[in-house]
View 1 (cartoon, one colour):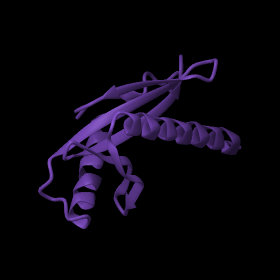
View 2 (view 1 turned 45 degrees about the vertical axis):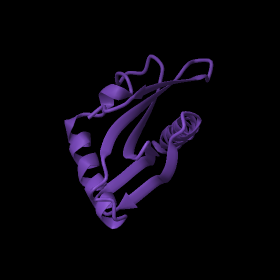
View 3 (view 1 turned 90 degrees about the vertical axis):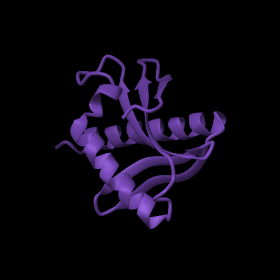
Length: 124
């Protein structure tokens, strides 16, 4: 049964998203939406930075995990999906003409439980 592992993964992901939201707010970003969903998918965080809409993909992993770094997990397929979901978001919120940037926030959880945050502006 993979349920406990999935619950732990979900909890780790939620922790990463919380840390990312706090990080962005501390940097002066205005948080517009968290976990914005449509039928195509979900945007983890939508923020605004000096008039630019910033679509933020948050990836959280344990340090020394088997699947590479969190940032490496945002492959071309994921990028295309994010772009499609972002188009729906922009249309539904009347922001089609806004300047948009895609960032990745990579959260790595160390063996001590500490969260290391790497912010990659304009990642895609």
